[in-house]
Structures are given as structure tokens and as C-alpha cells.
Image 1 (cartoon, helix red, strand yellow):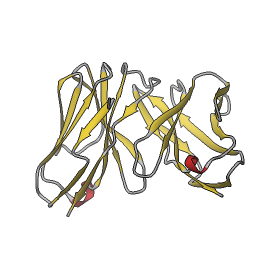
Image 2: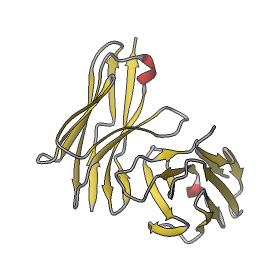
Image 3: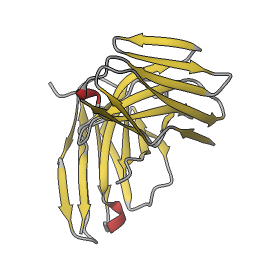
Image 4: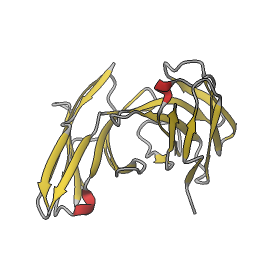
Length: 114
Length: 108
């Protein structure tokens, strides 16, 4: 059983397109996250939701819009894709919103914008 | 604000012991976490230190000194499969802030 799953695993698209990434966790956790990992492997949080409510919204262009239909799902929609959006996007979950909680990461979505 | 520093790369031989250091500057420190990430894989949790001292989990141990704003991850009896990136992370305002990562290369 996959704890945190993401789709798609790979995404290749043209500049200017709109795309979505989906994430689901079956761990019963309350909190979910989106991270971006750039080519230098720097891992930076983008958003966090706790029980469907947005609790962390880092300085991210408003072309990025997260949505959490329920606490087991967190999707990321990206409008007007740019070359600099190319990265690996990881979804993660944790039991609660405390930063000390262990975070469980999904396998990542490798986005390449051409 | 918060910042973490760790070496960019460490190389060691199979069977050896290696220590990966992490120094941090953060307001409101709660604890230091360590994550492992293999190439092409996802970060996975290794350990968490909230209090000073050493936490041991099998071949891996993690140490924290709050007074020195310093911690380290100790890997013993290195195996080839330990080749990976290792990230330290601190909690800041309900989120984890990660260091830039240390690439560990294990040679035979």
C-alpha cells in the first residue's frame, strides 16, 4: 500500500500551458504539504494544509494554486507555466501541523517545461 | 529567520564511520530532523532530536547541542546503499526548513 502517492510521476509540457499535479495520502494524517526541489536539490516548502485549511503559503507566484478537497487529498494547479517552474514537486503529509512531526513524502512529480 | 549549514559533499569508504554536521541559526528552535534522499527518490525521515544528546537507531545516530546550535548525523559501518543526500531540517513556524543537503558518496 502506497502511503503518499502523486500523479503524474513525469510531466513534460510547453511554456504557457496549465497543468495539475494530484496527491493522495492514506495515512489518516491531518496535514499535507507541497515542496519544490530545484536542480541543486534545495527543498523548499510551498504550501501546507491542515484539515483542508491553508496554513502555510510561502512566497510563491500566484500562478500556483493548491486545493484540498478533503484532508486525504492535496492538488497543485499551475497556470502559465514558465521555464523556471521545472523542478521536482513533492507532496508530503504528517499526523498534525507541528513541525516536529515526521513528514512522509510522495515519490515526486518531475516537471519539465520546454 | 532561519539558516542551516551543512557540507555539500562527503566521501567515505565502505565499512567506515562518517559524520555529517549541521549548524543552524533560527529563532524559536524546537528540534533538528534528518532526512535521507536517494537519487531519483523521495526524502525519508531518519531521526529527530529535540533535546541535547545522542539518539541511536541502528547504524545511524543523531546528536544535538542546543547551546552550540549544532547537530550531526553519524553513520556507522557504511554500506554502498548509504550513498545518498542527507538533509538536516529545523522547525520554524509549523514548517520544516531544510538545509541544502550533503551528498554522501560511499566507495568500495
